[in-house]
Image 1 (cartoon, one colour):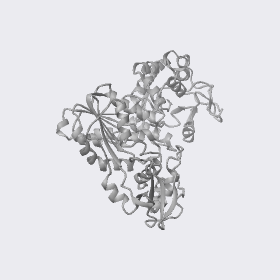
Image 2 (cartoon, one colour):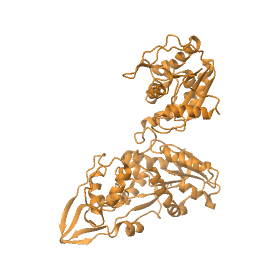
Image 3 (tube, rainbow, N blue to C red):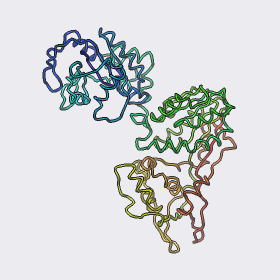
Image 4 (spheres, rainbow, N blue to C red):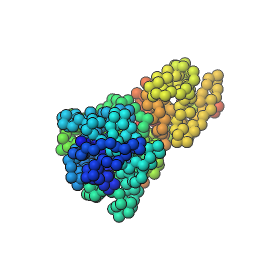
Length: 530
């Protein structure tokens, strides 16, 4: 007879221990299920099974501990209970209605058929809404901390309550709430591995979602294809400035830049460090390493946020590379986050080390008023503001709109949740229709008008907050010297393939419209630590 205790098990409590110990020693008589019915079972408990859910996740607010640390705590916890404890990792499979069934089958698979949990040989101990899944399968449920299933009220602290207390406690080891509820098996692991520091960092990080992503609206399949498609071009641009030694790529996505650098004979003795905040992309990096896609074995990936803290030890890196990252910090974080990010990179470099930053950039004179011509014959002009439930349907609809209609949608959606209002006016000039707006806002639209596949995500992002001179000023204020090869430029491919025939820019001079040069799209900024 088994007790099955499903959960993420980031932490174990004293109540859990005493509750289970009582069942092991005194049996099931007198206990009730969550619905107030007596548990009419008199079997002796032979073993406890701990399915550790989200075992493939770590370093996020929701799942700060890796599976192996959770398993260490459970093993010590089980030894004290005095009967065998079996621990099985259950990977995250999203919001699965039959997750309980998946868990049972996973345990059978992982145990090579040794443990086949059925309602006849297993009682489930659960105090969250997951218990209803097991009840539907016919399992007897013991409610543990649950006091009232109608309100989901708990009569004592849940493990996650203790985690959150630690996250905001200046001295968690002396905190009376923590000492009252946290079981010594977990306390020792948290203390030994300094887990509280990571948890407190994760909980302070307002930029990252509970599951460890910058944005929940990005289609990462589209994003990965975009990153891989341009990786070689980006590497060729940066390669002449890479210094051998310790080389880091922050926001490494799926490791494409590192993969190319590993093939460069100049860096065969170098160590490579990829930093990625997105759980999904980090896991792809790890899988590519397992697949043997990196020529250099000294490639290490970490999942962390390089804004709230240092990604590398102080004065340890010869080269730091970032690409298409800094605008995301401004977009999803704050200006202070971006300034801290710049200071962190300076602190991490050795003297003479370089930070190579390739990203979008604002046009010079971004406040200048311009007249934007938009093609209104290259697609539909019907209902540009139509709403869709799926990203795919929205993308299909946007791709059929004319450039003019897509601008109208952009003007409404762009950073709306952030409180930004794009100011523009429609005007006629020589019997032709134009949009009058700032050059910066025009550049925002030009840079994003074709990103229909990830429209919802792109609408949160700003590209045109600093022009190249402003970027250099902020880098210098942090202590960097600007390498003379640094440059801001207009991507000719974008002009030829996305702008010509769809848009045109003009400025007013002496009562006449004169062509305005295409705005810069990209900067290649190299900061050197003196």
